[in-house]
Image 1 (cartoon, rainbow, N blue to C red):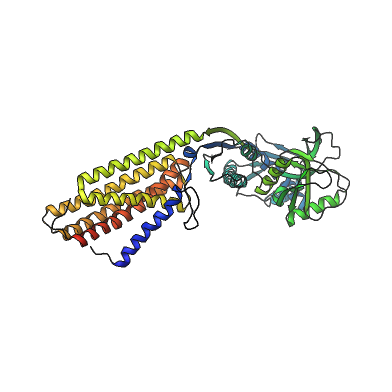
Image 2: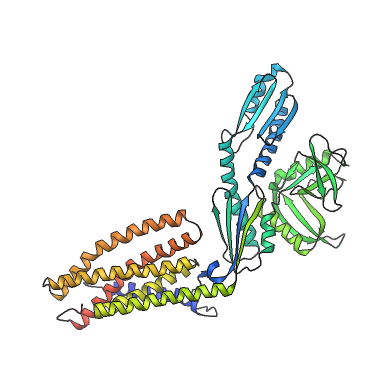
Length: 513
């Protein structure tokens, strides 16, 4: 039961650091002398918006089938092999074509093995007579869907961060849904628009007859003239090759435009297609709508360009933001939206603080009544526990929700259990006739192992909750996990220090338990 000066300073330093980290949450203006980090309030405490997004898996399958069709055609062309009657069937996720000659069957089947795929065994090839079928596999599409949701979460995060939203929460829910929580955002219409835009930018040639549909082309709306244009299905340059985009004022028209820069691959492809098609119209297509379709006057080899489409400042800025963040792998639809007003959030904070304060006061009274001075020391340790919890949450700028506040209250209960266990062990040693110092030493030693074992079990369980949980569950697990660590420190180190100092100063003949 001895604490060296260095150990005393260490414990005092930890407690002082906790107070400094905790203080910014109770001050109105930043102070340069404090490590200014605050806890962020969650949606249920601050108010804001909740969006539930769903990924369009049918569109994902359609786009993959379309790209597989282009890859298959290009592979056959690269191997000098021909085909006839190439057909795409979205309902069965199947591509079919007829061999040019039966003698090319083996060569075609061998060539199809070199078609690039993102996941193993993505499609199955079957040949019946002169007919060859490529069928997308269900398991492969499920893997692609999982990857698409993960990719969408990152793109959604980049788009929301670019709007300046503070501490958004973005998490997967189920196989094809994403939950977005925006604390402090009462009108999420702009964000809904940004998230609902796929932002898939492609550059494609118009068909030779741009007013009539033909094989290998699709009729798309020209948003500037509100007419239909026949745009070739083959994508000459894809938006994935974009490296930057920005909103500028067009020097010629005086209106807003969006500039873009391509990487070396995109710049090379852009230069090749414009060099080979001077005089033809080249469509800039965003989410299957033609923004503009200018004539190619000269080859464009610099890898940069400008999009003009009747933009105002906001729409040009938003389009540039979308292009920089990247295209979604498939459209996202808002299937649920809820708004929580700041008054309701304030009521939640009030209720949470009242419950936390009431629980703390009841615990303080109980401990003092049952364990006298040692109960008072336990109460001081509980206060230190709460301060350290808030300080650590502030250090990591964590988000506090109502379940998180419930986690704090539960942590205090767990800390009380630990202090009761220590005091009961000390009381048992006194009843056995041990001296003051021996009773203190034995009481702490007997309780320490039990406290560590029980808290370690709870710690592992809540780490699993944090890793695999989402939303409120994750926040609850975070506060409990931090609380367990602070409980072990305040119970086994801080409260023991208080009792040791009391013993060193007073040298009592009996213990007040």
